Structure formats: C-alpha cells, structure tokens
Image 1 (cartoon, rainbow, N blue to C red):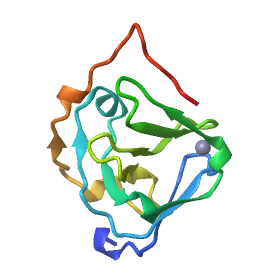
Image 2 (cartoon, rainbow, N blue to C red):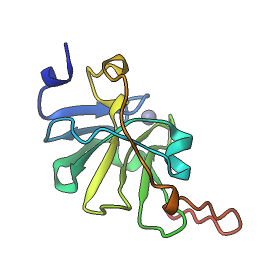
Image 3 (cartoon, helix red, strand yellow):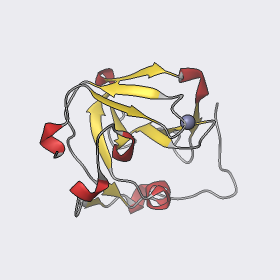
Image 4 (cartoon, helix red, strand yellow):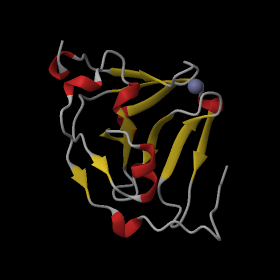
Length: 133
Ligand SMILES: [Zn+2]
C-alpha cells in the first residue's frame, strides 16, 4: 500500500481513539514546519480546507492551545495528548493535520517532507503565553 491507495475520505484518530475525524480530500501539501511549536511536535502535516475536515466523535475531548497572535489553534486530545489538527496561522481557512493520525498511513512512506520556514512567526512569549479554552 502507498499514499495513493489511501481512500477518501481519509479517516484519523488520536491515540486513545476518542477523537475521530475524517477529511474529504486526499493527502496533500505534506510538509514539516520549523516554527516554535511544530518543531517541538515534530510531526509531518497535511492540509485541508476547513470545510473538508469533520470531527466525527469526541469533540468535547478536544482542547486548544493558542499563543502569540492567537490565530493558529492547535487541537489536541485531553486524554491522550495527541495533536490531531490545527487551524493554520498562515492560512486560517485551512486545517493542518497530523498525518500520523491517518488510518492506514505509514511514516516509512515518507523519506523527506519539505520544511516550510516559519521561524518568523514562532516567537514564544514565555512571559505572556495564553491558553484559551
Ligand atoms: Zn485521545
């Protein structure tokens, strides 16, 4: 099986399985980001227009982390802590999602995902970090 064999909608979940989501598009725009939060998470992400990503179950278990400009919203499971998706700061009409959460996907399929240089938007405000619920 390869990336092209993944069926649409893509289905994804967090580690404990309470968060389930589907994406009505194929895996595309795979990349890594070197902003302060993505470099810590270390995952490869894909992108989808917001209307194409649906939370199928477990919405009440999603928590959100925001900081700095508060445009990007990083969603993670309150139970297992896995980051499932985020509203993109560079394109707030799209979600980025953690491709390792996608059913059937294997990280070994990806040798290299390009880096997007987002260091300019990655200031960590350690004195005024805001967590909005
Ligand atoms: Zn979970």
